[in-house]
Amino acid sequence: MLETGRGNGRAIHETFLELLKREFLNMNDETFLNEPVEVIALFKAGHHPCQPVRFKRPNGKEVSVTELGLRHPLPNGLKTVHAFDVTDGGTDYRLIFDSERLTWRLTMEADHYE
Image (cartoon, rainbow, N blue to C red; front, side, top):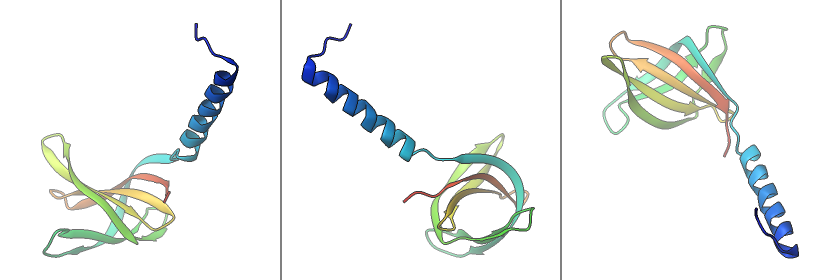
Protein backbone atom coordinates (compact mmCIF):
# COMPACT_ATOMS: atom_id res chain seq x y z
CA MET A 1 0.00 0.00 0.00
CA LEU A 2 1.28 3.45 -0.91
CA GLU A 3 1.85 5.64 2.11
CA THR A 4 1.33 9.32 1.50
CA GLY A 5 1.55 12.24 3.85
CA ARG A 6 -0.95 15.06 3.71
CA GLY A 7 1.12 17.06 1.21
CA ASN A 8 2.09 14.07 -0.91
CA GLY A 9 -1.50 13.06 -1.69
CA ARG A 10 -2.21 16.39 -3.33
CA ALA A 11 1.07 16.30 -5.29
CA ILE A 12 0.32 12.80 -6.56
CA HIS A 13 -3.20 13.89 -7.56
CA GLU A 14 -1.85 16.96 -9.43
CA THR A 15 0.80 14.84 -11.16
CA PHE A 16 -1.86 12.34 -12.24
CA LEU A 17 -4.06 15.15 -13.61
CA GLU A 18 -1.11 16.61 -15.54
CA LEU A 19 -0.36 13.19 -17.02
CA LEU A 20 -3.99 12.75 -18.10
CA LYS A 21 -4.11 16.24 -19.59
CA ARG A 22 -0.87 15.68 -21.53
CA GLU A 23 -2.02 12.30 -22.85
CA PHE A 24 -5.44 13.51 -23.98
CA LEU A 25 -4.16 16.75 -25.54
CA ASN A 26 -1.50 14.89 -27.52
CA MET A 27 -3.85 12.12 -28.65
CA ASN A 28 -4.00 11.64 -32.42
CA ASP A 29 -7.24 10.75 -34.10
CA GLU A 30 -5.75 8.39 -36.67
CA THR A 31 -7.85 6.71 -39.31
CA PHE A 32 -6.26 3.78 -41.10
CA LEU A 33 -7.26 3.51 -44.75
CA ASN A 34 -6.36 1.60 -47.88
CA GLU A 35 -7.53 3.93 -50.64
CA PRO A 36 -6.05 4.03 -54.13
CA VAL A 37 -5.19 7.66 -54.91
CA GLU A 38 -4.06 9.64 -57.93
CA VAL A 39 -0.84 11.51 -57.11
CA ILE A 40 1.07 14.31 -58.77
CA ALA A 41 4.69 13.92 -57.68
CA LEU A 42 8.04 15.47 -58.54
CA PHE A 43 10.88 13.13 -59.40
CA LYS A 44 14.27 14.85 -59.24
CA ALA A 45 17.87 14.39 -58.19
CA GLY A 46 18.95 15.12 -54.65
CA HIS A 47 18.09 14.15 -51.10
CA HIS A 48 14.35 13.68 -51.79
CA PRO A 49 14.19 12.20 -55.32
CA CYS A 50 10.40 11.71 -55.13
CA GLN A 51 8.06 14.25 -53.58
CA PRO A 52 4.24 14.07 -53.65
CA VAL A 53 2.76 17.49 -54.45
CA ARG A 54 -0.97 16.80 -54.64
CA PHE A 55 -3.30 13.81 -54.54
CA LYS A 56 -6.91 13.04 -55.35
CA ARG A 57 -8.97 10.70 -53.20
CA PRO A 58 -11.64 8.32 -54.57
CA ASN A 59 -14.36 10.67 -53.24
CA GLY A 60 -12.97 13.42 -55.51
CA LYS A 61 -11.36 15.49 -52.74
CA GLU A 62 -8.03 16.98 -53.83
CA VAL A 63 -5.32 17.53 -51.24
CA SER A 64 -2.35 19.87 -51.80
CA VAL A 65 0.75 18.84 -49.87
CA THR A 66 2.28 21.78 -47.97
CA GLU A 67 5.00 19.86 -46.16
CA LEU A 68 6.83 16.57 -46.63
CA GLY A 69 7.67 14.76 -43.40
CA LEU A 70 9.51 11.47 -43.28
CA ARG A 71 10.02 9.30 -46.32
CA HIS A 72 11.06 5.78 -45.58
CA PRO A 73 11.08 2.34 -47.22
CA LEU A 74 8.84 -0.34 -45.72
CA PRO A 75 9.01 -4.09 -46.33
CA ASN A 76 5.85 -5.44 -47.95
CA GLY A 77 6.22 -9.17 -48.45
CA LEU A 78 9.10 -9.79 -50.84
CA LYS A 79 9.20 -6.21 -52.08
CA THR A 80 9.73 -2.77 -50.59
CA VAL A 81 7.27 0.11 -50.80
CA HIS A 82 7.96 3.75 -49.99
CA ALA A 83 6.01 5.59 -47.28
CA PHE A 84 5.60 9.37 -47.38
CA ASP A 85 4.28 11.26 -44.36
CA VAL A 86 2.79 14.51 -45.65
CA THR A 87 0.46 17.27 -44.47
CA ASP A 88 -1.80 19.89 -45.96
CA GLY A 89 -1.41 21.97 -42.81
CA GLY A 90 -4.68 20.75 -41.28
CA THR A 91 -4.47 16.98 -41.64
CA ASP A 92 -1.56 14.53 -41.75
CA TYR A 93 -1.51 11.71 -44.30
CA ARG A 94 0.59 8.66 -45.12
CA LEU A 95 0.97 7.83 -48.80
CA ILE A 96 2.48 4.53 -49.94
CA PHE A 97 4.19 4.27 -53.32
CA ASP A 98 4.59 0.79 -54.82
CA SER A 99 7.56 1.20 -57.17
CA GLU A 100 6.92 -2.19 -58.85
CA ARG A 101 3.28 -1.53 -59.74
CA LEU A 102 3.74 2.27 -59.95
CA THR A 103 0.66 2.81 -57.77
CA TRP A 104 -0.13 5.02 -54.79
CA ARG A 105 -2.36 4.29 -51.77
CA LEU A 106 -3.51 6.50 -48.92
CA THR A 107 -3.10 4.42 -45.76
CA MET A 108 -3.52 6.89 -42.90
CA GLU A 109 -5.22 10.19 -42.09
CA ALA A 110 -4.79 12.02 -38.75
CA ASP A 111 -5.36 15.38 -37.13
CA HIS A 112 -2.35 17.70 -37.55
CA TYR A 113 -0.70 18.94 -34.35
CA GLU A 114 2.12 21.47 -34.20
